Length: 147
Figure (cartoon, one colour):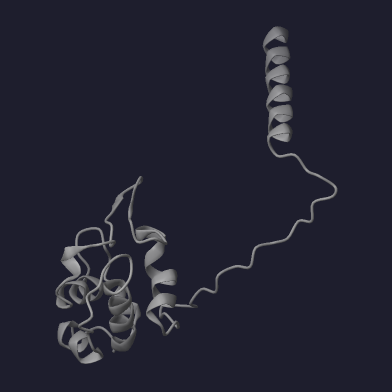
């Protein structure tokens, strides 16, 4: 019993030393907190531009470069995505969801959905210039969702 306590204490000490060595603190380094990205309060997004909406609502899964990710789930790439050619498809997916993609458009106005869809369709190597409108979104939105 005494030997196991000694081994445990020794391992704990070694792990503590390793943790301290892996994150050296230098007295001459100024520690500056990173500014936090503003988040929308509550159930509705407050951002107005497609870029702001993408950063707040989409990039957590699709990544800042739009290339998606694989890990705890599979998040498809939006970069150079031929599925975005028809503006109606991404509007439908944002508003109504699809497979693991939640209907995030329920938390956006029609104008916000149009803005983020237009942003994705003209960035990340996509060059689809035919913009979708808030009216296009309204036609896809179920009646139970706020506009």
